Every structure is written in C-alpha cells, then in structure tokens.
Amino acid sequence: MKTRVGFPGKARVAVMSGLVLASCLLWRLPAITSGQENPPAADQTLHVTTEVVNVYAVVRDKKRPVTNLTRQDFELTEDGVPQEIRYFSQETDTPLTLGILVDTSPSQGRVLSIEQEEAKTFIGQVVRPKDLAFILHFDLEVELLQDFTSDHRLLARAIDSTEINGGGQGVMPGPFPGPGIGGTHLHDAVYLASRELLKGEVGRKVLIMLTDGEDQGSKIKLDEAVEAAQKSDIIIYSVDITDRAFYWGRTMGFRGDAVLKKYSDETGGRVIEVTRAKDTAQAFQEIAEELRTQYLLGYTPKNDRHDGSFRKIRVNVRGHNYKVQARRGYYAPAD
Figure 1 (cartoon, one colour):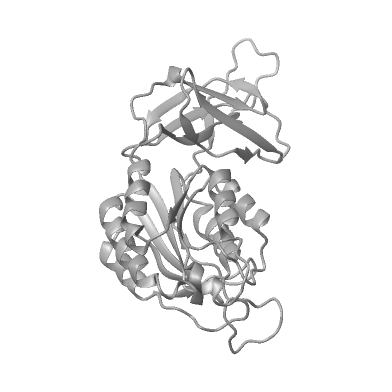
Figure 2 (cartoon, one colour):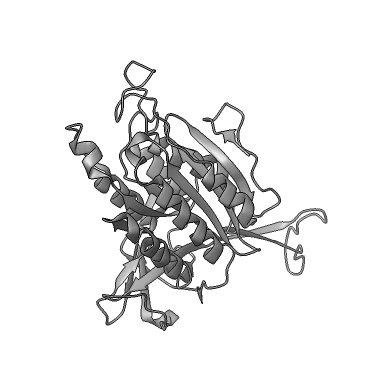
C-alpha cells in the first residue's frame, strides 16, 4: 500500500488507535470525605497525575553491549540534578514499533539493492507478531509504502517496491527546475514519521534510516526534525551507506555524516557507517543486538513544572568507563 505523507493540514496517514500514552499516568481515586471540612461532591473525582520519563539506554564496552547491569549501577541526572530511578528493566521482550526509512534519491542508486536484501533479513530477525513496523521512502516526496503491520511478507513487498527516483534538482538535475525543490527530502521524512506516524504510539519507538544523510530540498530544517523526534520519544539509528564516488564525480560537497550523527546522538541511537556495501548485513546485526539489550530507566522528574522546556538528560554507569547511548533530553509538558 502506498500513501503519500503530507504536512499538517493535508490528509494524514491512519495510525493505530486505542493506545494510552504511557509517559503520563492518571489514577482516579475515590472521593475521601472523612475529616474534610468541605468534602467533594459525590460525582467529583480526585485526580493524581504522575509523569514518568522513560529513558532507553544501551551500554557498550569497546566491543559489544554490556548486559549484566542492575539499577544500582546507573546514575541519571536531569539538568544536572540527580534523579531517582524508580523503574528499571532490560527491554528484551517489550513490543517494538519500528519504522524503516529508505533513501531512494539518485545517490543511492548503486547500493539500494543491497539495502533492500539486508533490510528484509533484519525484519525477519527482529519483527515479532507483537511488534509493528512500517516502510517509508523519500526522494522528491515522502511516501508511505506499508502502514503498521507485523506481516513480514507485506513489509518485504514494500521494501522490494522501492526504486530510485531520477528527478529533482540538487543531487541530480531532473525535470523540476527551480530552487528549493531538491531530490532528497530526508528531514521531511523524519518529521512526518515522527509527527504523523509515531507520535501516538507507546513503548519503544525506533526509526532506522538507510541513507547517506545528505538532504536536498526539505521544507523542514534539521533542528525541527530532531525536535519532532524528541517530542515523540523516538530512537534513531542510521545505516550510513555513502557512495562517495557519486559526489566526487559531480564535484559536490558532502555533509551527510554530521547530519546523521546529530539525529542519532540526540535521540539515543547510533550511526553505523558502512564503507563497503557487503558490510551492510553487519550494520543491521548490530542494531538488532542493541534492540535486544536495551535498559529501561524510568524516573519522576524532581522539576514538576509544566513549562514546555527542554530538559537535558545524562546517564552514566558508576565505576566504569562504558559508553552509554541514551537520549540527551526531552520536552516537558506544557499547560
């Protein structure tokens, strides 16, 4: 199924309904009348709201993920203030909501077939019946090829349907002249996946981008796309497959590496650079391994103001020089 994904105001993609936002829990308690001078009316309800910030973390030594840590091993701060980790688990079995974003601009022409095969293998290894995944591609436009499903056949069919679009201005001139059109709408794809597909989902939400990170012509800026991903609690992994000869042959500058690093660093993911096309399988295997070894750290912020501000998060492991992958912050709710 193909659906063109548009910006707010246009017809949006249908998303799964009936899910409750897990990061804000609301309990309804019976009215307490004993000893109260002015007890609430019988039909009134006392509302107690507890906001929990969930942080998914991957801990690595020099070679592989570290999987034997306990709650006491971690320390977590928000804006420099230590927080009590109240909820802790290893997320080996929690349902996963996954989006695969495929770059189909001309710069990927020589690597797309390999990406397709390894992405299908990855889906077969990672996506279980209780998980959900979607496939989206981007070039001159952003298009949803398969909506949420756990059906491997449908996901594989969508991946196989991706093909290089030769149009656009920027990476390769095409039939659409004029400034601001471009041929690689990466930032638009991240923004729309975050705002229209994943925002209402719960639990572990991951985007995997198959791209060289070069954007040409997006309406959305990089910082806006990163903010949208952060507000939707998304982890972004990037499989950086760059055909550098494509850019050298056109005497074009290249900034994609820094773009992918920002996406992944800010959201708690990782960039895996593929220097040889045949190493793509290893990149997907590393992502699969990390998704099976995540820790969940949940805390109730000591700063309970609803001011919509960005709060910086830092996670460390006591007594070790491990590398911790975790999102760098979140946006507080706004009244």
